[in-house]
Image (cartoon, rainbow, N blue to C red; front, side, top):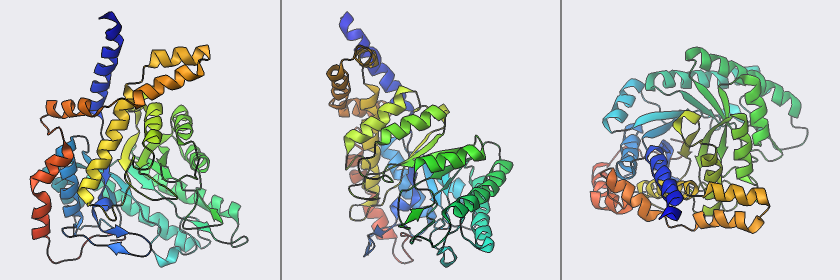
Length: 398
């Protein structure tokens, strides 16, 4: 009996942490999406941000851990954001991060915040002032900025000058953001290529971190799990950013080749487990850590709402396994140089079937133990297919 006590303690601690876990959903995941060649339409897709939030609330209703929805401006423009926030609350969720858009305006062909023309740079900065107004109206405290800027050819522009322009533009945005509310946070994303091919202006976590350090303590790095070259040790990046207190958020998705935006845990569930191991090891799963966990995905050929449900469950399962790692045994093996023993401790946790544990937690919370089956049986899909006739479906870029 005594030998089971540490395992029981780990289980109870894992259950307590899982009860508090939350994952934010992206509004754009519920619209039509596809590849560069074709956007695939589905019946019942939302026609406006109100219907996107209604769909997102279904994910939270069956999983119990997806209480926030990220908005993308201008994709989610409405006349009254206070009313949209009220609509979200009526559906049991709230507005999360506000995402800016610098990649769908003709003026940004040569860049936005790094553009050689100060008039274009001001336009890009002003767009973020609009996003800050949306934050105030919805109760959001996080502004996420992904910069698509870069150059395609050597000599097209000065690499150094673009970094200087970027620093100035970010400083203007950060000053307005923190002046609006000292709780506000700027989270700065990176991506190693695309849409620019020769030099991307924020290609890696180091560049993002340097700009954040220059801005101030309310500037942090966003790590999109799809935004890395093949073979990149993402959990190493996670550990480094956590050490500096500068990991602001995750965009969870999966990639096979490039930024594929597939369901989290679909391509490499072991990588997702390794990332979550770094998170739980230092207690960064707790809301007080300031790290926001969210999905950033497109569901091109699979159904939207079930795709989000499955993704949430995948992250939840990876987290549960990470929480079950026998840390005293792992540390003992590491300190003694027991290479295979240390690896074995991690593998034991990874190979644990945590689905019964999570099913029990859902029952405890008054939920169906099987979220996918619960949604399928709800009749919601049939309802929205019948009701959402006419209008313009939301989609990538709308």
